[in-house]
Image 1 (cartoon, rainbow, N blue to C red):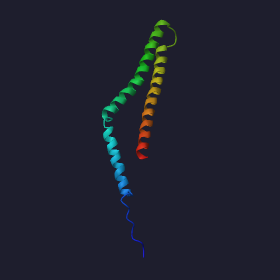
Image 2: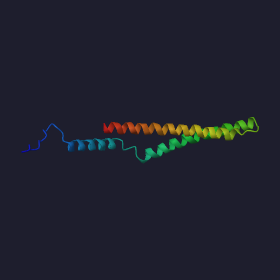
Image 3: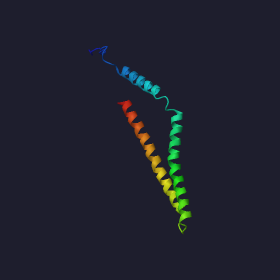
Image 4: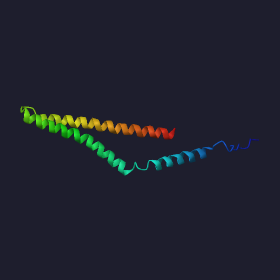
Length: 112
């Protein structure tokens, strides 16, 4: 004869109760962070866009000034435009990686 299945004590949570508790905690956290919806995404896109555009425009403006001030065979405008674009792309990459790392850490905290 086999032993009958053991019933968990009232203090001992069942796997189903643990799943329900985890889902409830996720829903509560989502309600607290509800403001990070579409507006948060659009704001982040704007931030990334400006972090690329601003150094590019500053590089072009400095290059134009240098070309007018010191005319020569080389185009400072083109060189500094490309340098500003590269700096802007690195800046955007920094922001995106920072946000991605924060989201990963938040997901790890939710799972743990």
